[in-house]
Image 1 (cartoon, rainbow, N blue to C red):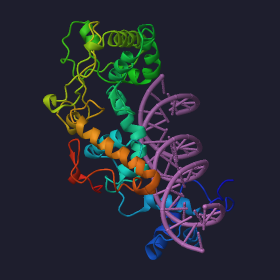
Image 2: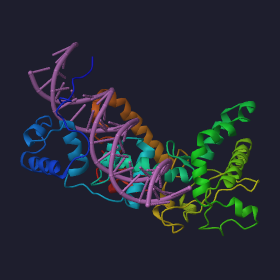
Image 3: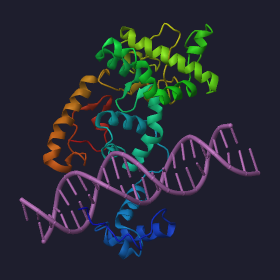
Length: 320
DNA sequence: AAGGTCTGCAACCGCTCAAGC
DNA sequence: GGCTTGAGCGGTTGCAGACCT
């Protein structure tokens, strides 16, 4: 037994909105407001589903919407909030004035996920891939560990190749005895023969990381102690395979990206994050009883809490 | 220049939840 | 308490333009 459709499927136009339709909807809402979306298309003279009208209005036509590129600050905010609340786009969008959940979701899926992957960070857990590998490795018996690098390569192949073929990489320069760090700005472009070598280097690096987890330094990717954006949270391989210092945005300028993105349970502000997770989990319990409170973004953060280095005072919609 | 592939965004779909009856 | 309806959410799809070969 499914729900009845929100509108007649016949006689309802779908697809891109025309400027004429936009005008009709905007002028109708300007006069009558947004009460009863089911009646709006009929009264506004539109052959559209009410739901479609609502989406068009909320995602595009609303006068308070901001169109165009996301700023560095906005991107930071998205990443930080995503690492706490996950794919709760409406909650994240509530902190970004003029941005919709759809905007945030699209930006995450098209840009930010790739940026994080390119930095060697798993966009789901917000931990470095190498860190995840080491965590998994410590839970496996030795015979299983032997196969982990191969499996990991399968899982993260795309991210690794993206990282190694499009972003700067030091290991080739190191093989040529050029000290790391002097290679800033050098990019290695993907060519098949280079990729083959890259894959082998990935395997080797992962294997070593897994077999010698103690080689992995305590993960403090963007701690204030080395906020110059040159921290290296990846395994120090003895094979010559080494990740370049990771920065993006304004390369190496100590931009907000390189300074303050804090990910995973081992971040320097992990305690605060843990508190936030606890608060979130408590509220998750309440969600089953309390309905949409969380979805509406009203109760996750305490007013005094700091979202890592993002003070709650900076949140556009402080969540009490 | 042409065809293929990739990317980013707008729109749609199906689901859940709350309110009203 | 159960059903219907409206609204909101996150995931997915489709398409146009950009880019690549």
